[in-house]
Length: 94
Image (tube, rainbow, N blue to C red):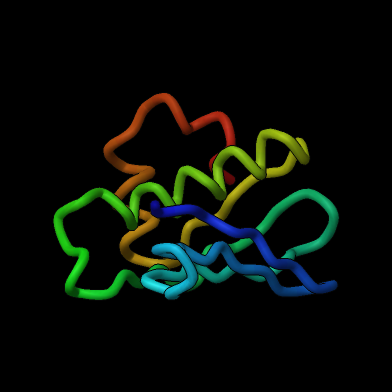
């Protein structure tokens, strides 16, 4: 079973993709002030390619942003491509 775990310190955070207890992906971000995060890296194990797991990480970040009422600046090329494709997440884009 694949799950997403959120970890955050004061100025950095990450969403980790786990297959049972094995890390298979990660999306990292930096906290920028009180109103936004900057997604700077998204990566999924090549063995899991084509399953939409990178998008699952980005969407976990979107859910987090909505819960916290903050915005996302997607600097990571992959996250930026997801934001370009999905009209329904533009509400959290900075």
